[in-house]
Image 1: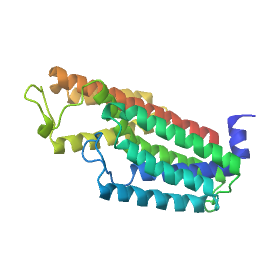
Image 2: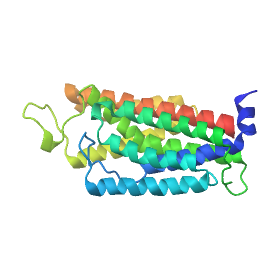
Image 3: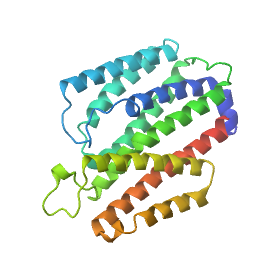
Image 4: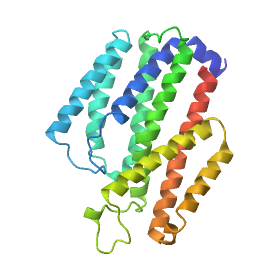
Length: 260
């Protein structure tokens, strides 16, 4: 049996998984951050912990409804939202990339297993066939991860190799360059837009445009690349961001091919 045939046979389960995964990505990457301008291994405030608990409860209730009142998936959502949010504040920034990939992988695997084991029925999305509805929701979930989740992954890799520059208030006298908060947030926005464009290019297999965009980015920054520290920061950040976008784009292409 081909992957497409299997997906059509289990379209109901795939739709439920897509709904729960999109809800998960929304709670993790669409709601306001609780970790400040730059994530660090510092305790969350009481207000942040309260917000985390409320998010978990609300997500659990919505999951309970989406899974047609099957409690196991709702419990997974509630516990995962609270525990992952708390752990995210404890994990060292250098391990941010591994953390984001691992928690999302384990969560998706857990949802697939519970959906298969419980046989829960999903809420249909209008008159759109279940497989196509699932494809749209999965693509939306990948998009959410690509933006903020991709930022976490890129920053984690930059921190791991020691090329993430300090903010001005953190800068040491021997630092070759530093970023202020506005520049830091501006760089994040540029990275988000860049990854979205790269994802679209990979999803439609437009690799020529992909190479052109990366080359144009390097050309614009050519003068700043004369600074060795900046060049390392730029190179690692660009490669990491491109890697996230390529994987996300291929995942979207695979989703459309199997479910549409």
